[in-house]
Structures are given as structure tokens and as C-alpha cells.
Image (tube, rainbow, N blue to C red):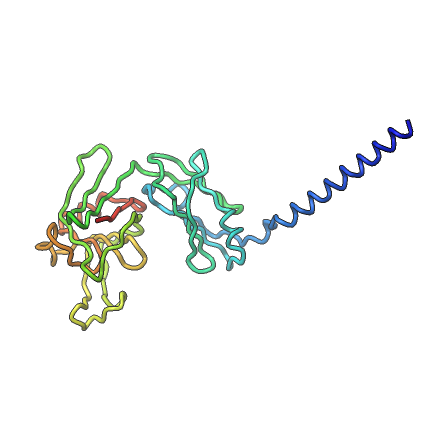
Length: 251
């Protein structure tokens, strides 16, 4: 009997030590939630309706020291959690970009630290810019595709290739070549009033009305990187596109 009691005692001691060791190891790899700065905003806003390429942006109240921890705190789901990539604009703004286009007509839940929000996707309007065929084709579910002549970036100012969400819709914007390193008074410079514009990159790539290049649209690429459309086509696209709708550019 004494032999059995001794074995039970040693078994309990070993189990207790294992539990303590596991707890210490777990504590060493868990960063307390209190170290994550307060989330001040999430975009899309709660209840927003957006296109199927819309990124999720999380703004923090103070600079984020542990970016990896902040990224792990963000989850976007539509039932199952969605895959995406992370990037930073400065030290307070985290951007989650979906690895593939979002499901259409779906509801999404976003968690960022202790903050939560929801948004919805639209029916899946998208556009295709073919730089070889010089066309801009818009696909709206339930409608025939609309194919429009277009002109994209010329040699040395090529339109970037990829899929880009519409970031802003601007009925009027002044485009100044000095913002992309070309002096306004140089032979290639410009300062123009542009209408029916959709921003695709923060670097200055837009889809917009370009009455000055109508003769080249459908035939050659003459822009400084933007997608040029005839005024009537640009107005139609402006009235039918939503924030977050994808535009895919390719050769």
C-alpha cells in the first residue's frame, strides 16, 4: 500500500510541474491584448455596400509597435475566414487586401482587436482594360457587357498591370503632371480639368474622360498611365461604378 501511495504522489508532482511549464511557455508567446492600440475606425464603414475588390482599412489611435500582432488581430469573414495580405500606410493604418475577389451579394464581418463591424458586397460589377486591344469592357450582372474604345499608358508611362479597386469617384479633379515628376511647363507636362474620374491607385492612376485623346482611343496608348475614355463613355461608367469595384488591366 505504501508503495502505491508513493507512486501516486510522484505522478501528481510530475503532472503539476508539466502544467506549470506549459503555462510559462504559453505566456512567453502570447502578447497581452492591452498592447494593441485602440482601433479608431474600420473601412468599409458598418453597413456599407461595396464592390468585390474593396480592401479593409484599420486605423489605430497611436503608432503600432508590434505589426505582426496587429495583423493577427484582424480577421475578415463571410462564414469562413477569408485569406488576404497586409500592408501599412505609415505606422497607424493597416490595410487588408483580399487574396481573391470577394463573394458577391454577401455579408462580411470584420474583427480588429476589440472592434467589430459588418459590410456587404454588391452584385459584382467589374471592368477589364485590355491594353493590347485598346478596349475598356464593363460587366454588370444581368446586362450585356459594354465595350468601349480606350487609350492607356504610353511607352515609359505604362498603365500598371493587375486588379485594382475603385478607391474614389470624383466628378471633377485637376490633374497636374508635376505630381508624377513631370514639370507642367515641360513638353510632356500638363495641368488639366478632368471629369468623371475614378481613382485606381493613390499614385495617380485613374479611369477618366479624355476628350483630347478620342482619336487615339481604340487604336493606340497615349496617356501617362490613366485609362482614357470618351466623355459619354466616361460619364456612363461614372454613373454605374461603385467604390471597391475591380478594374483589371492587362496586355
